[in-house]
Length: 332
Length: 255
Image (cartoon, rainbow over the protein chains, first blue to last red):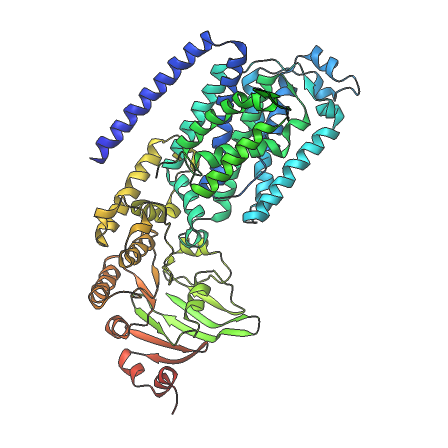
């Protein structure tokens, strides 16, 4: 009976995959540029949401360093893929260091490099920091993300500092963003199904019991953190390839909180929930833009307040945390 | 099998265990008893590496070789073959009964994480064996029908049995049971006694247990250690210990 259930699950997963691909194909043909961009963002946020859920939801590590890892990925992709003449135009304040100014990589190796560098930083940061727990870990990782941002602001000859980088080739399309998103979903499914993923969950459930059952807390936490930061780097790289412009201020705490919002609403430790909530939240972020502008209701005139739509998200988040702790989309 | 050599454990000014000595031979069932707060669980925590003793050594010899395990991490000690259950049950509550036992197998895994993600044949073979073993152990503790339930939904007695099954999955040579009969009714307690003897034979275990149920302690232990205020006050077979003057005083007080 279990085997039959597994067969059914396999079949329905395949059907969903095919439907998604067909849907993407149709949407790619019919949507205008603005909507296509949102569709791309949805895919990227699925990857980012899952990467954060791996660390925070499945392994139970309260980390807030996501924006830092994304910045590493985004800058790596931007610097490696940008055409050489474009680099000269960007770096007018101070020339770029020579070994970076003369290289131009294709998108895929640059993207992988972005992920690997972010993963490497995750590993190096994780080794000392993961000895901390709960809020202490959150503070340390938050601090790390800020350090990355400040370093990127001040390394003028590598990152062009506060001016940011413009003219990054727009390589990210629907196939890139959603292809990676689908690979990430599969990665997570397979990881969590296996023995290592279950060990991550065991650590989340009860650290003392997990280590008494022979699970090395340190090894598994660092492993999960490194995978999560690798994926965050990939997501950041895709974002750079989509937007075409990046600067250090993009990677503020707010970015981490946007992803945290997706993870919490989707349910900590739920792959399906995160995927759905990533799509909904990304679309809502755009759809609720009218709240930022001035509104006329009959004779009533409300002055526009930029950032008003975030209030809505804050309220939804508060309701979610109070009413349904395990996330709005997570089944029972 | 296990030698605790002149071990002292202090927490600030409190001496939880004072120059404690014990020697457990292969194949024995040894009981550790004593009034509340005597330091029984502290001794378990020291043996499993949760605490590092202030003084003294823990020596483990699963084979002929002796190995000092003082100061090793709990997961390293579990890998060597000492596993335990907890007084206040510590299951992975939100996970299924089967997953709880399955995770117990994880420390013996040979495949690395990438072959697990890519589901390579070597990993799949290993996973299949782990699953079969887990299901066998669940059958053994009579929980096979509940294997898809969440661990927290089980009644108390079954949770205790699940914890033992999870510990057995780590393939221990020495099993430490911290009050396995706590909260069980007389019927369950009698079953438990048979069960402990059973698993000892089948898995070739040495068992060290803390228990308050005198029926269990007297019924299955080959030898009993009596602890009071962190000090060993008596040691011997059940009959000897029952008649020891100091033990009676420790339990009932002095006139």
